[in-house]
Image (cartoon, rainbow, N blue to C red; front, side, top):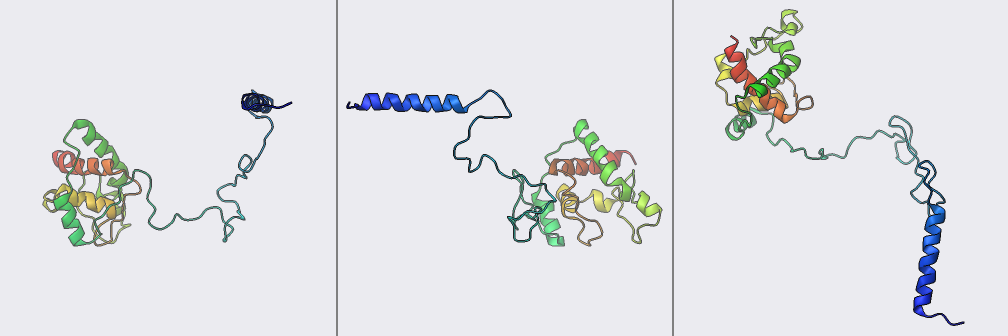
Length: 193
């Protein structure tokens, strides 16, 4: 018996449909028969467990140098006085004096900044009054800070102070929250004197 192309095609499709029906099940935990399971049953490793796939045998490895998170914008100003001044000239605060943004800035300020700078921003925070710091902390209500451009304050919160006394808060605060804190320092603290 000689098969023509149409008959051969119909038999092939029928076999494929039969295999699909035979291999699939409605049970979520058992997906039927597996053919070519090269990736279907991969081994899952716990984060802190050993992993024979890496040379060092560790599962937790540092990210490749230069890797940034998705949607993250690298901060391009260096932690120098020149970088701080440049940030002050080029960066513009996207947050306005909206009460909601200032209130969020105030709550973030109380969590991250007040421990050193004080609730009123006068440089008399808990760590200063309890003599945990040997240096004075900058008063945020002083003219020295209040006359700085917003970009310089954002820069200091992002990379830390040029002197190195204050560390970076970029890993704790999203950029928008850093801007809100700057807005609170400039408007909220000034009004609470």
